[in-house]
Length: 328
Ligand SMILES: Nc1ncnc2c1ncn2[C@@H]1O[C@H](COP(=O)(O)OP(=O)(O)O)[C@@H](O)[C@H]1O
Ligand SMILES: [Mg+2]
Image (cartoon, rainbow, N blue to C red; front, side):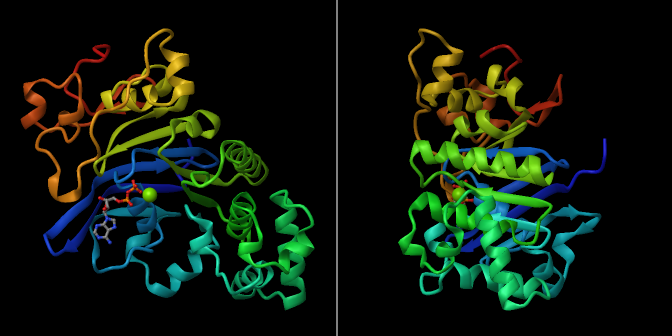
């Protein structure tokens, strides 16, 4: 197998807060392979966005601090690059699509002005060429009448169209990696499906690798080859998407699957859908032992005091739970 596009090793991120230094991401490791769609999944507050932002050093430091780890991209540790090199890399090699296009698009600039700006910054194109290329990019994400769209302002477009614009902007410099943070969360179901289809076809067309962040396992089933399940700042399970959805090893993964109507019904005919009780603990209230134990229907005494280590299972899978496989 060729070298991974991105190799994240033992990444630890904390925040300085009035309540002291709190750990948001507690030593996660994973690889993004060439041309794959990898999903990072977990409920709100698990640390997905913080992890993604740290890859491009987009977290405000301070209050954030990357206290340990490596983020290797093409053999370079992104955590030790200077600001200028990082700036070149952002957008050009690794691009990001954010959750809410309304907050990431500039409301007072036309779509054309914003798109051209990126091209003018990273290439030697003239303004005219940049606008032409912007129109091409908009047609690649299937936006009708791209030339007209260039003259419009973000508020004149629908949510789905704005998300397409964001994706087109991310594609500007043909990145090798696209990080999409909840790219479909703000959209209705039909548009969600269209955006996922678009991402999938762009991946095929360009060969880029994608890290897709979502709280929705339905999205995973649609698009990802491999999945990382994150809970309270740690990766608690990982593996190929089909195997993981068919046979979750971690109680948290099982809970997530059960709470997606489509998947839950598929996996457990006749059984009623379960929700995971409670919510993700805040950073200053992370439980001892296994952080999931207060919400876990299978928790045993050991789970309250001992933190489970990641274990390997057959088929390139990993999970961290004290229970024996097959006990769920
Ligand atoms: N600037 C910050 N200061 C303090 N805590 C933060 C900050 N940004 C995020 N957090 C906390 O880090 C945790 C993970 O947040 P986030 O990565 O946004 O979760 P997710 O994307 O999985 O919903 C949350 O508990 C959140 O409150
Ligand atoms: Mg988030």
